[in-house]
Image (cartoon, rainbow, N blue to C red):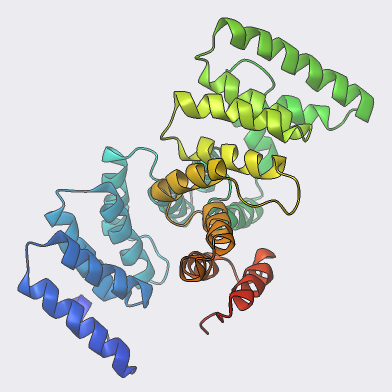
Length: 338
């Protein structure tokens, strides 16, 4: 078994924990929870070969759960040094059969296309993933870095491709291209143009209040004008129409936060939206930071630290917010684990 080729851990505490989780999974061979606990611990400790084998078993026990298929594929990819192997590709494709919007699967299938010499296919998939990703999604920095790399190596104009795909076109109101064009105008011309679009869109939404894309467009338009309270109201209407859409939750929460006066505590409304967002996207940076802040304000130091430590684990080393999070942890009297 290739999964057994990894050397035993040098850290006695790590070896003990792995042994305990492995024993529990073996004692309860039909327990999905026990198998996932082992797989997750192996993955978190970069034992990707072992994790892949554990996720393979968990995938069978779960009858093909999309999130487990994605984790299986990612473990195979990391075990292969970043190469998306054929078994990994099949795992990601399996994930998309039951969850067509699975972000992990789309990212790695794009990576597979780029590795197979199909940079345009990779970039098209990634641009659509970027457009569908919630605000503050943990994968966005990595996604954009990979898009820039592939576009540069393949001499593809990323901005031109984004315009060609016309992402988000078709809904009423200002499109991303409209707003981009508006940036070229004088401040007065830009304001007049966007105001006209907003008025037209608001009139249409009165006649068709169930136009989800329209509410999203209205939210983006108000955000361009730094009218965050109005943006939040538009995203609230969108959230009512699509209560499980993580991107809308992120945009809604971000607008509520920006609408608050500086120094104000995180409101219960923001906390409620962010908790729903974190349930949909456990690694969401926006949710982890502000829920940590809310817990700290409530005096719940352990809960705040848990959110912020998880955020630090997922932030790129050069992320500007890293220093702020470390300072917040220090203020709690809890140091970041090195």
